[in-house]
Amino acid sequence: MARILDAFPGSLNGAVGLTPEQIALIEEDQGVPLPEDYHEFLALAGGGGFHALRGETYAFPEILGIKESAREILTEAAPGESLDGCVVFMAHQGYIYSFIAPPELGGRTYEVAETHEGVHEGAASFAAFIHGML
Image 1 (cartoon, rainbow, N blue to C red):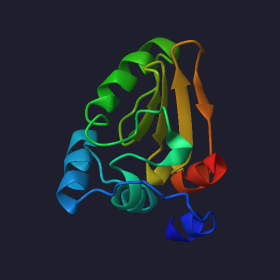
Image 2 (cartoon, helix red, strand yellow):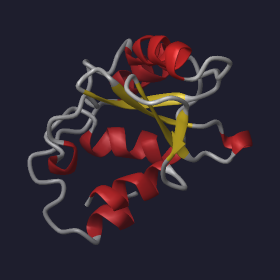
Image 3 (cartoon, rainbow, N blue to C red):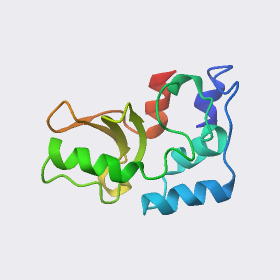
Image 4 (cartoon, helix red, strand yellow):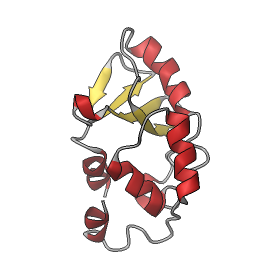
């Protein structure tokens, strides 16, 4: 993750990293271990101020509880799908949620939206998602 961010000078200007204790709270809230690249991102910018995600809900403490909100949308948009083992890392205006599949399912990012049916494939990893945002 640091290698990707280093390739875009200034991308962390104004970003606030999280403490190990704050990251542990997010992991506890998600109910699953956090992927390494997401964990590293939280340590660098999980407290807010990351310009590429301006306007999105991704920072601590607002990220706490986001998985339950995403589960509600998923139930309607993609009946039969589950967020078990997934990490929900971002919301857009409360109707689009982005999540990381568990490692045994490849660790890709996906998106579910209140306005669309189904789950939509995103990037190959969280690091690739961030790279695409920069």
